[in-house]
Every structure is written in C-alpha cells, then in structure tokens.
Image (cartoon, rainbow, N blue to C red; front, side, top):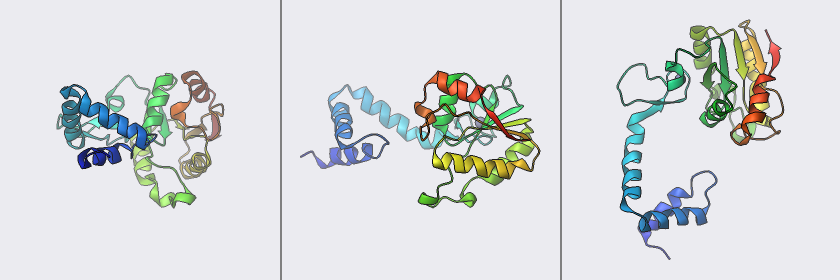
Length: 205
Ligand SMILES: [Zn+2]
C-alpha cells in the first residue's frame, strides 16, 4: 500500500529491537510528513556513524573516533577521576549506561559484547577472554565486579568468568540479586540496580 521506497524504510526500522511493523510505519510516515530537518539530520548523522564512532580500545564502550587520536578511548576511560581499583564487567553497552545512571559504580568497565548462550551457539571461545585478560594485566584492578544480567546466560557467563579470572588472585564479586531474575539491567530502576551493585557478593579472591 505504500511506495516501494517507504516500504524499504519500514522494513529497516522494523529491524530495531522492540519496533514492530506498525511502529516502523509510524516512524516512516512521521519522517515524510514532518519538517525536512528531521530526515536530513538523521541522514547526516547516520552517514557519520561508522566513521565517527568506534568501540573504545580499552573497554569496548562507544567512543568518539572523530578526533583521529590514538588509542580511541571513551569518556570513562579518559576520566582520570575514575577509581582504577574496580573493574566492572558488563554484557552490553546498554548495561554500562544503566549502571552509570544508578551512580553506584565509580570504577572502570569492560564490555563483553555477548553472553555465553548454548541455545544460540555462543561458547567460551566466542567471548573476548584474551582481550579481558589483557585489560586486567594493564589495569591491575584489586576488584572485578561481574555485572552480567541475572538470566540463565548471564549466570553461566558469570560462572565462567569467575573460574577464568579466579587464577589471577583478584577479588571477584557478583552484583547482588534484587534485579529481577531474567530481567534486563537496562530496565531495572536506578535504586534497585544501585543496591545490587552496593550489595555485591564476593565469589573468589
Ligand atoms: Zn573505555
């Protein structure tokens, strides 16, 4: 019912998490009927996205890569006021942002990018364990906080990490339950997430 060009856009928007065909259609119709600057701004920013944003070379968080400085570091890694003794391991950038919103973490991060998932065929070899060891050797934290989500995959990943990092003699802690089981850290409220971090339990070390 819509012109081919718009349908193509609808299908692209529908690939976003949580966006169905109907919402995608609403986005597209809004784009064509609203002021020109929305579509133009979007096209401009999307064009820059690949060249201007890169994963931080230290932690995997999103970093501004437009200044052509090397290494490419995110704002957290560049912040000298951060507590270098604590390194928090998260699954995704969204989780890092949720933890930052809670205000309970003053340390630094490492973003895994994925979780162990036998169902989706993600095994230990698919996790960036070599990069994590490298990061730990460089950062020399005294505590590693495992903040993977309290889901089946998140717990399996936490166990693997505790075993993998246990040999390094660092204190390893896990965020406390309180975040609903199976729940996304992203959707936990700030107070609950803050308490889960403050009430973290020691696993090893
Ligand atoms: Zn970083």
